[in-house]
Length: 75
Length: 266
Image (cartoon, rainbow over all chains, first blue to last red; front, side, top):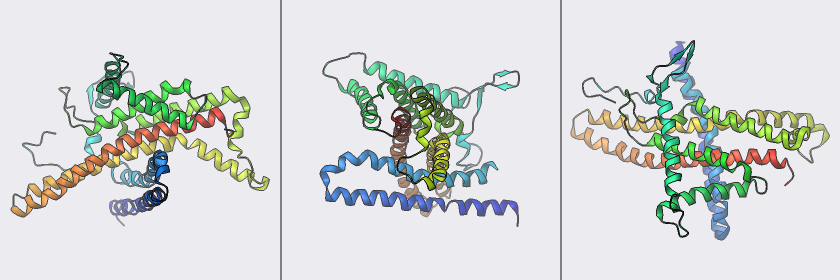
């Protein structure tokens, strides 16, 4: 196979890492909302943790995207 | 970018290019003054100006501008109190500076501006891994130093969680060690990847507008409104991400410092 084509396919496959980020972010916001509806008075106190969890989950997916970008533009 | 004469080159990556504005070479060392240096200097300048000017009046009942400065201070101070608690005060200047620097770098990257310095245009310093890695390395080295100074060899008990069966201990210690050593990497890549991905996405959607608009047809103009609306929404999201990543960087710095100050007992 052509190396350029293989790079493209590899970068595309690496983008699948973002599916995990999507699942993670959905879980965090879904569970936060479920918890907040049950106990609205405690929701505000957990908001920083929500943002932290969101950022951590998103970052794991973006690690894959970084490798994809490296494949396309750097390697 | 000047695209009046030549055909539009839609390239979402060229925005990250580093340009030497004032070439400086010392021996083999390339210490040129680049657009990255300009944007970082600007971030420091604006952050300092914001805090100095907002606190100039020192009114007992703060006005609007002073309130902004106080909110920034109390935000970081409250975050440090929640994550470190007792013993975190000496590190407040560091965490506050890190937070403000990253925040202003992120925000400056989202503001479209041009300076009469070579071909300087809006640039995100935090979209370069070496910038974020340098910041994360400072945090990592500080955590190790503080831990060793405060606890001596006892610091290494950080890698041995309490209540783990002895059989599992070698494996757990190895995992803890690796996760500790990859902290500077994950801390820097998180910020860098978020900024790079966000700005690439913005430019890709902006490219769609230009591509559709250049078709000079009614369908093209109508179709261009969709990515236009989308890129407005994404810009809003990117402002959220810019703030969030600065916050996460500061919070993780606090969590790592907390490990070094309190080990596992708190």
